[in-house]
Length: 230
Image 1 (cartoon, rainbow, N blue to C red):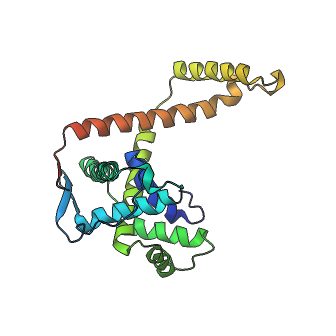
Image 2: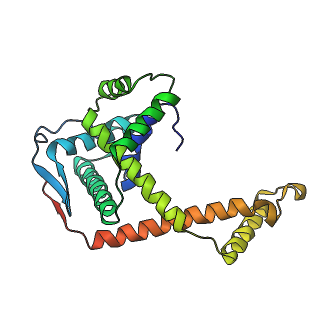
Image 3: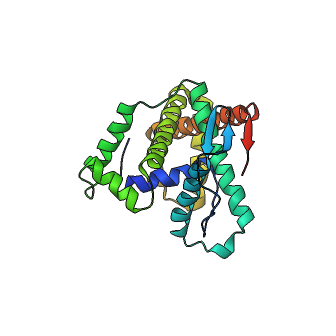
């Protein structure tokens, strides 16, 4: 796993990637406080306080993208945030159903890797201090790290099971040649099938893994018990 500078910011963005939503939150909601459960998916639960964290994550990340409060209504914001909360809990429930979890040692190793690779962070304590200054509590960020590592494990699992058939490779190479013709690359720059085969295989396997994972999670969603009380 490659950890780039300020990787902790990417972890927050990751929580948005899972749900595929783009939202911005411009003001606090006073009622969102306490431990009362507001979203549940099977055995996974999210409290009001934790839901507030989801809104805070969205606010910080999409404010940086330049989105204004006027671009989205409160109802759209609430709907998108709720969808994201459901998607996160659904993913955790799915991971549990297939026996995927993250150990404390794996999380510690992840923090160590950030410290080693980020010149602005020298200790784990300093890493959590940075998160706190950005408005993210230790518990909430630990949950996001766990979610990220679980996703990484599940993706690697599907990646290991995916294959690229000869037919798919040939078709991918034909697509490559069609693209070459469109962009007008000179003949001496065109790679042969043998030269590009490994890259084509890697692309097909990755695409196949993601497609299979998404289909399995969608099926799991249909069979899940989802309750929302926001």
